[in-house]
Image 1: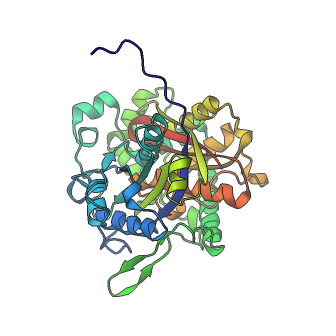
Image 2: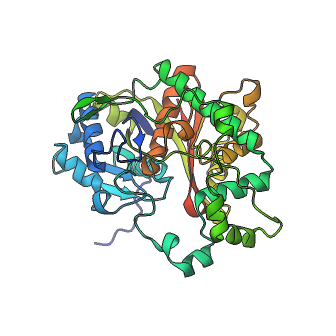
Image 3: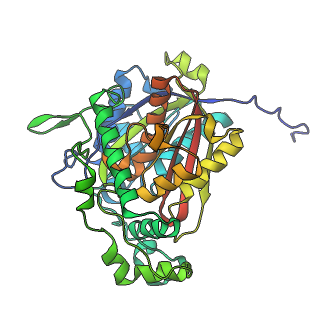
Length: 413
């Protein structure tokens, strides 16, 4: 029989964050503290932690995981494999998301969209990357390896793009170094104050103590140590990447190579998970709602300038939410190189020099490491925890990714 009347529209549903866990971040090196663990190992470890904190896997409708290099150990759908190996039962599905460094944001945004649409009541979403085992660019995609694609797209290394942005915006080496010092100092202070204790789940290590803290933080960093570092991306620029960038921005005579390893995000291993669902589903499962996901945005910008899209996503997300930057109590903005953070503070009128600590108040990826697929989830979870700490209402988390991609979410405590 043919239906002649439309189905009644579903009542609007909100998506809430109930819990957040992450691993510490390890150096992306065979000597790093997480190197012995695969991506599946890290996800299983966090799934077990969520179960131990009261989550019943039987109520989980899906697992959605972001990852930037989905091959080898990170291939074949680790979301599903980890759920099976963690003992969550065969009834829990799993899927993977890839929007480069913004993958962890988009995994959570996808979960929220499914909850809001009525397709799922409770979803576990997050991200993972084990860069020490599956190195950056190891997927060999045409964006990195095919000369025709590189020429057509204008594909350059993210570090060269960062130096391009610093040149376009007129930042000096001293500006970048000062920001790098600030990120390290804030991260060290946050760890000392125990601000990550609720979320970070220590990871066992063979023959040693559990890894319980981000191992990339360098509390002794100062302006003198930063100034002693050599530019990190000048050789790449001289090898032909500057020519690509200058072809896209002919108004520049040259690119100033200013970023160093101290003002670039350190690559890291790590994983993070959030529990997202309706208030009713969470309360039935004995979970307490912590923050509401108001909106999510994905944008694309110039593929050569590349790293400005995270900020573009923030500005659009605020506009959609009817908010201004002044309304926001905490911005968690992935530190994709110091110049982009300074640009963010300038354009959104965040006066860090005079005590405005709303952006990355506990440090960021320059200090604690960038585990590509996990970073966005860590940004969101960290934003929830910081809103709770300072009793703020509105928060924003955002990440820029390769090829000019950017994603952001607005949350309400």
